Image (cartoon, rainbow, N blue to C red; front, side, top):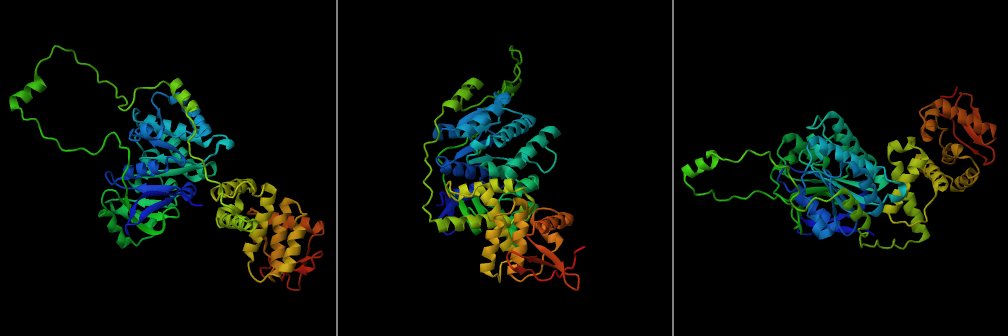
Length: 493
């Protein structure tokens, strides 16, 4: 069952909904020039989902500390707690407490370092604490710049690595990145590329309009529309928002940032002489050094008090809905769909099965399939079976294929996949796969490994390799009483 949150109104005056569960799996990128309404959009998203999911806000300007009064977020002052940030982050994940990491009191270099330390600690949490959490990073171009930044090179590398981990590898750990930037051109491409959902606001530079149009699948001549968007208006696209570009006007919020847009005020009506005296009149007071900035919304909190507050803050009152009722057939179909989606990624073929299984478990949690999902061993065999069917999908003798799958259950894991691949080729009447294709199937780039594996299988009596009069390879299966067609590639040695 989808959990939708309302972020505003679409162009057709219908509610603009975001699928929160899909957002957790596919991440979000927001772009817009200063004044376009990015912070307002993020605040609306935070408010609407505050009771549904844990939230962690990386706040460089202290704009989101006002969430604490209304929604119970704990404000972490990075300047006062820099050395304890790893411990605080670990407890945040353990206790599932929503927090705002306030970086306002730090210079650029300190902001990058503290954000990197905090994000890395979230990323390194123990597996038992990999609960779903929205990680909102405002002004993301500061923490993942495409070029040199105001901070030191070391701090820039630390921050960029942490942001890359968040967007590229965080999903398996329950971390769903939501990043906002003023300019796509300033944001590192490998960070921006991992988002599957987009909300694009007003922007004026040609390069940013062109990139926004490309990400939304629009024609270049339509890019001019981004100049005409009003404050708070965005164009959205993605599996959690809409399958086609959708115009969205962001709705009202219940909290406010501490700055706000400047307003015009009347100038003082004093005469010119008074103004001169105000500036240059002699004073007996000695000049004093400027006072350091302090948080305006709350008094300073010691680190011990902050840790105690996190430890004793009760878990969110939200109770997750029970998984939807499914028949065994529906659950099996959903599992097959998940594995098929994973196989669509070309890089999946070269990933260890254990890593694929971790990704599989996360996807099962997102689909709310409950605890009755395949363990590592069952997943390995199911993956091999579906991959073989994917390579040769049509024209199979299903009775012969069923016998092949039953026979494969007795095989060791390293032979299972290749055996099923060869069997699938045979039952569909296809030629024997070449060495390169066999090697690719079990995650290797070495044809020599494929030949060694075939030799081992032949020694065990599972297959018989023979050649016809044109030196084309044929694989026969004595126990199953079928064989492949001749290998048209003729690449045997």
